[in-house]
Image 1 (tube, helix red, strand yellow):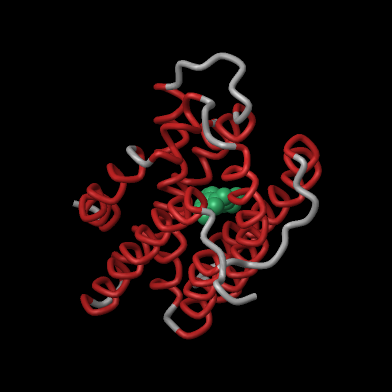
Image 2 (image 1 turned 180 degrees about the horizontal axis):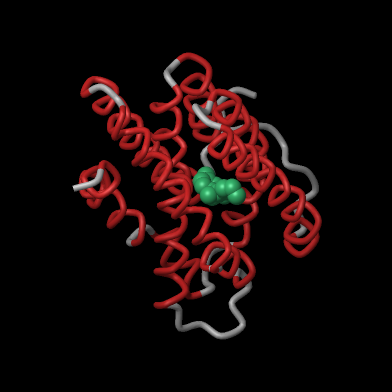
Length: 218
Ligand SMILES: Cc1ncc(C[n+]2csc(CCO)c2C)c(N)n1
């Protein structure tokens, strides 16, 4: 069995908890409080910028030029998505600025950036993979199960259920599987651990948006 299949099985309980979260079920039926979505959007805008930087750093460390190019393009896309969010969603939802990074987003970004900086490239690739993979699965799940018409969050749903995004995710999974094939058992173990930690952070990210969780002291 490939590294990715084995590792996805480890996070199925996290994935199933994510699709049952009130943030997701309410996003699906369009009933999610605007205030929670605005908080999510503002945090995600900050997340995408730093995530893009982490991806570019992984690209710089990639073992061959095709993989370097793939990660640099993922990084560019993350930042372009961020710009598109600014221009369209921010206008639609009345968010004035991305604001500062609140605790969960701060934690997640710094986990990814320090993994990209200090760990081996295979581990860093595994750490950023849940961001791609979980979003594709959640995006497709919502798209297939949504019942609401005129959902105010339709644009968000369409972004992640799109075919183009699906192709990028498959490519990211393939690169991680190739990296795992030549990695030592110890590195493979750390790759799995990084994938699990980032999957937990994906759960926490939505949960913190539902709770609008901010720093106690600002
Ligand atoms: C917290 C959080 N996690 C994952 C994504 C999804 N995502 C954003 S950019 C990108 C890849 C490059 O296009 C992916 C998969 C998100 N938006 N926010």
